[in-house]
Each structure stands twice: as structure tokens, then as C-alpha cells.
Image (tube, rainbow, N blue to C red):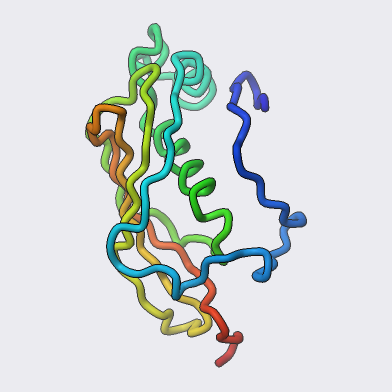
Amino acid sequence: MRIVGLRLPEITATIGLPSGIFLPDMTTLTFEDFKPGRFGTFGPRRVTREEILAFAGEFDPQPMHLLKGLSGSGWHLCSVMMRLLFDGFIGRTASLGSPGVSEVRWMAPLRPDDELTLDVDVAETRVSNSRPETGIVTFKCTARNAAGQALCEMTSPIIVQRAGVAAGQ
């Protein structure tokens, strides 16, 4: 896949949802499937020097990202984290979106040829007060390189459909 000079690797998972239509019967994970604690580790995903330079040139053209691609943009790392989340489980979750990201911390630079994995923990779950047919699941994610060094931590809630609870109940 090519997007304005950015070459992305072929994805290993696809979700066949019609454009803009949410179909809960095509998903497998609901609010009740998420319990506090370790949820899983996803990846690996190698990030090349060429990807670092392409992303930086398009979206974050600061010198430390463009000069020989010595370190990747934190935003590039967040994008890779989102891809790992989607391919790992979000793509088959009855997700209704997210109200935002609570926290992002960049702890060490992304380097060319880093092989990334993503540790995902469920930090908290609660039924929505205003929409009881949904729940809020807060994830804490840590991206690590092959040496196990934490590069980025992100905490983010998502809104997830509850199993067997109709809207308005």
C-alpha cells in the first residue's frame, strides 16, 4: 500500500465491514470479554529506516527524524501501536470508538529496524452511566523493542458494546 510517498507493509488481517456500517454479529469481543490485568502481547512489527524517513517527511519533518533517519517520530510509534492494537484485537471488538487518549509517554527513541511488540493491559472497566448498553475499557499499552526496552506508554479508553444489552435498557 502506498500513501503519498509512505510505503506501508501489507497487513495480515482485514475486516470486511461495509463502509461506515457497524455490524456487531461480525465481531467477537464485547465489554464482558475484558477483565482487568494482562490482556496480551501483540506483534512483532519491524520499522525500517525508509519508513521512519517517509513518515517524518510527510508528518513530522524535524531534523532528528529526517537526518539519516536516526530516530523515529513519537507519532509514528503511536501509529504503529494503533496498527498492532487493531490487528491484535480491536478489529474484532464491538468497539464504538474512543473518547480520546488519556496519556502518552515517549520513553526512548524508535530506531531503524526496531522490532516492536505491544504489551496490553486492561487497567479498568466500567459500565457507562449515560449509555448502559456500553462499557468503557481503559487500556494501558507499552511498546517495546526486541531488547525489551519500553519506548512508549499509552493509556486510552475505548467504548465497547455490552453483550445482550439493547440500547435504552
